[in-house]
Each structure stands twice: as structure tokens, then as C-alpha cells.
Length: 344
Image 1 (cartoon, rainbow, N blue to C red):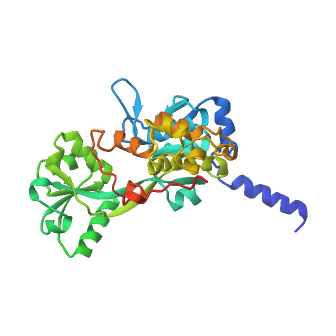
Image 2 (tube, rainbow, N blue to C red):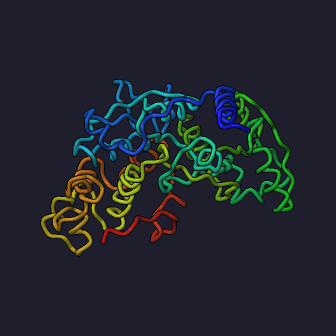
């Protein structure tokens, strides 16, 4: 085939290909954010309680919102150098690919298809989203195995249907499923006593329990049916931006591990207990240059946002209306699986 024919074939093939969505320029996200003067981060189209919600004064709060603030503070030294963009679940990836947001922090799982098909890249996990079971406290259940022969509410059309079927089969027990599609109707069925137990994503259960105002009447059982790592999500092709997300998360975890919090960070900076803490807080130079940040970036994050324990407890834990335990989202030294990278 002549060269001209080859060129014609190549041109025809290119024209026949479906148009791909326009992607924002990856590789210089930090420079773009600095030039703009603010970080664009995801919120929710409404309230996703505990993670991204708006209070009665119009202020954003939640675990994901505080992580947005932590990244903004790492870059600018100011948690208010941030614009929260209300966004739906379906809008997350187009908004990130187009540059309408710089980073997605929105209870999003790291999955193969999102990595390989959507061209996304993930931070380390900051929350392990488990499928859990809630039961009426008056039943005295210690685990779902004690509910053999009982009933369980399950959201229709979800992976929870298969998860509970597989889990009960392994335990050798039988539960009568009550499968309902709408969350409001499902919760009504459980809270009215139609079901002995209710399976859902753990935070949804804890928040539903808190919303009823009768936390002591319902228990979250220790059974874990499934696990999804929640991650911060970025466009592929900008390793420095991924590094900033990961080291910001590590700063929150390292501070908790070393006992550094928003209340004592100035004392720790004045008298660092270890060489690692000295470098972490910018007393010893070197923690910022390789990331394109100042050496006091981690100090600013802890001073303004707090360590990971502070972030979790005020949004989901004992200082919040939801009273959720840390469980696997605790540090490694406290029986959980979270850990910081090493500040050396």
C-alpha cells in the first residue's frame, strides 16, 4: 500500500473514533492551584451527613471537607483558601477530568475501572468503608449469628443483597430478607420493628441511628460484610499532586501517632521531642522543598485543621451527633489499619 493510502486510512480511522472528553492539563496542578489562589474541592449536592454537609448558616463541614481544608492549608497555609464545589456522585469524574475541581474527596472508593478506564489516580486510603449490620438493642445480639431465624432489612438492587447472603451462608444461619429500594422506606421498616436487623454501609447506619435520637436503642454489630477503601482521587499524570495528597494525609496520621494536635503543636514546635517531629514541624529544614511547599506546611495543617483523630471525632466520632467508633479507621497502634508514611 502506498504511503498516501496509509495516511488516508489513518485519517479515516481517527475521524471514526468517538470523541473523548476534554481533559485538564495534568502535570502542573500545584502551579495551577497556586496561580488561582484557591483549591477547588468537591462537596455534595445537598448533605452527605458526616462527610460533606452544610449547617444552618451555610457553612460546610464533614470529614471530607476537613481533608479538603487540610490540602488547601498545606499549599497556602490557610484553610479558607478553598472553594467547595457542590457536586453529585455522577459529576465527580467529568468535573475532575475537565478541571472544574482539582481533587475529588467525596467518600470515593479506589477501584480498578476508575484507575484503568477513567484515567484516575488515588491517594492512600483515609477511611475503610465497611458494610455493617445494625440491630435493635433490646434483642441483646452480640453478633448477627445470634439472629438466626430473624429478619433483616436490605437495600434492593445493591451489593448488600449478595453480601448478606454469602455471609449468612458461611455462618450457617438463616435470615428472612426484607428487600426495599427506597432508603426512607427501608429505614422506616427497620425502625418500626418490621426487621430485627438492617444492613448498609456503616456510616449510613450510624447516621440513621443518630438521626432518630435514640442511639442507645440500636447497636452496630461487630460483623463486617465487605470493605471498600475510600481515597482522594486525582487525574493521572501528576505525581507531585498525588504526593501532596498522600503527604497531607500522612501529616494528619503522623501527628496523631506522635501525640501532636492543634492544642499542643506550638509547644511541640518549640521543643520537638524527636528529630522526626522536628523535621515534620519545619524546625529542621527539608519537609517542604521536594513537594513544592514551604517547610511549615505540616505545622500549618495541624495548627488549623488538627490531627486525624481530631478530624474524625468532630465529624463522625464522639464529638459529633453520630458517635461512630474508629474501628479499622484507627491507627495501627490502636488496633486499626491506618498508618502514616515516614517523615525522615
